[in-house]
Image (cartoon, rainbow, N blue to C red; front, side, top):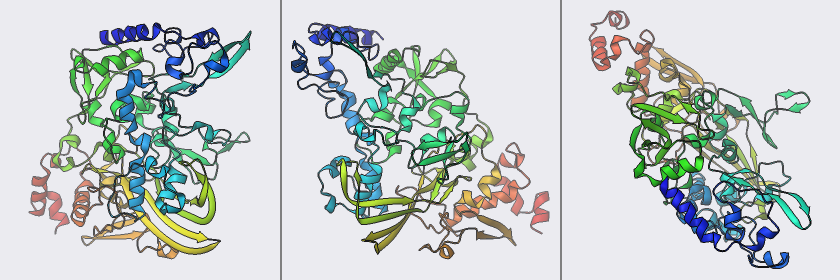
Length: 586
């Protein structure tokens, strides 16, 4: 805290020696926040221009309207925040290189996930030299990066995004209020570290849709219902709609925002180029529900963030992430009491610590990620039909102009049933869903010239956490959970049979398995993953999961004595030394 105040006063001294003439005209401008007082900093320290000029024309030479765009930040914001700028420049939210690299892999254009520079790589590459995946990325994906040009979105019906640092940190828009006697009164855009979730949702509402899911919104198939009072009430943007499903408990119980969990380093980058989001994110469920605490004076950042927030008290002990040792300054320990504070307003909440009940400590569940049991649903978008018109034209979000080639997305099989489970990127059992399934048809002058399909699954935290876990039966004898897809699973004469509901061949799809199936009951994997350690269950694992179901039918409570030593209980069963085995194994 003392360091912050010393730094603040030094900065005021540094810039206060040279206050510019801008304030002669802009004297009624509102404050940007509490830490950038323009009467001490002036205007030119952030916006450039000619600070000692005496006319508007001279003063506005070389002025920068938005100094937070990444091409300007080193010149302006970098005077105080260069370390952050260096990290943001390498982040996925800035360059999206991991998104492009995975797309090229899933389109079959590369045999491995090769590292590129993402948006920078495509800026100067001629459109006619781009691959299909690169063209798809430029026209359907690249709208979401923090340095996108905001003005593109004006009057389009779509949520504006981009602008650099303000993409996340701006919480109020600016505007001209009045001009009187050549004195311009401006409402300056307001910046804050209390970033509302609405800023995150500008981008995190596609792909795995975690932003929507957290708030209990499931994107519908486009019918536009419900329709109330003469208006469509459940609209995401111009062409997208949603249904209401159970929201994440962190939202329903405490109204937590995204920033209450996600750390500064996890969001803004740690200075490394990460190919995947899960590599960049450093928070986990256990970081809060089974926390480890360290002295806050080991983290200068903790005091700084606490002071910038203004509502979070400073504590001698704070929680840290186990992955990257990042400070969780709003989770604090005072003596033996644990306090959790909501960042938006400093509201304190009691934290539920992870219990040592058998369902958490049993070796039978040691491979389970928390999300496997506590995620109530996951958005599953089966079969994304991509139609590409070679002779069409479409807006390119990187080159910022229409270029040759046009994509059209068609979807019709969106589901939100029990999440399928698989081995995730962390080698633990996690929820999984299509990510994504491409059925592509290519036309040239209305003539079909080519087609391909690339079906992939992905495992992630769907952000639909509930306090109550899924039932034992839902995991151990639900074909969708096993990754078989929807259908009828049965055991007869100790043989497992499965009859799928969806028949791909009958619907004209170029595949020999149900579109919602990740594996067969024999453990054969139908669809790919873009993570080297991720996969569906193998035959041994499928049989082991289903085998436990035979016990769960009767022993469906975790305090049942058979689970205290399940391996011993199984041996007694197969040795016909239990009452039920004498009946079942006769």
